[in-house]
Amino acid sequence: SGKMKVSYHAPEDARIQLAIMDDSESRLRDTHALTGSYQIDKTIDNWQDGPIDEWVGKTVQVQFQLHGDAEIFGFAFDDVSTPGSDTASIGPSDDRFVLPPRHNYVMAQNPPFVKSVENTEPFAAGENQAKEMGTGYQLQDLNRPGHVLTSKLSLPGKEMKISCDTGSGSVTVSLFDESGTLLNSSKPLRGGLKTRQIVRWPNGFTLNDHVSKPVTLRFELTADAQVYGLHFDKVFWE
Image (cartoon, rainbow, N blue to C red; front, top):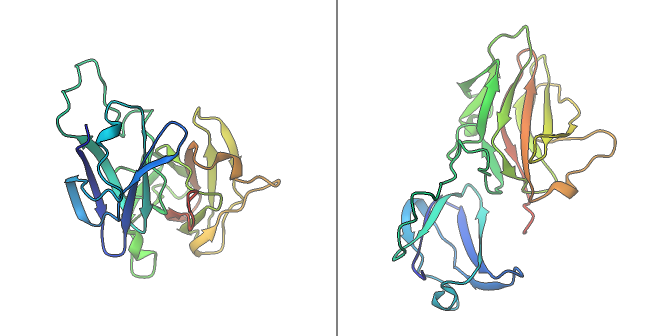
């Protein structure tokens, strides 16, 4: 169908731009910036070069460019027959679900960034912590290590930054590929509060070969360390 609807959240200075591309990733249509808080089933009628009707029934790719704190929840088309009962939806609980690339990931977001935890619990970040992150994770039992495992995400860029407070302990980031194979573990972060601290990797390892691919992250905490969020100043399409 040429009648596309998108559900998204683009508050204040955030925005989303949507592109329709063919199999060779050539752009067919772009939208102007999509803005507004919690827009549900917003009809897309601002294609820059006219409607998308001529590509109905053809194979295309849909690309969402997220800027600032923008979030995308899903998209749909009007006037399309209902899928059969054998068509399964892929949601956050499905192992095939992959979070789209974005500049910032926080512990309490929708779709969820955190998939599972071990000996950690959420808490509200205080005045002297990364309050803008809203929620962090810390150990339940300080005498043993714990971790926070993320949902799969399409790795947004080659420079990863973290916001955390290591306290008297440490925070280490482990990176896994789509199959769950460990790619590398970062150098431990220590020394107190870190806001948008670059994650360093040992032995010359870089993220270059994994950008845009599905990965999983594990934040490993010791002692009174706390983790708040993850950041990418530049995503791969910028």
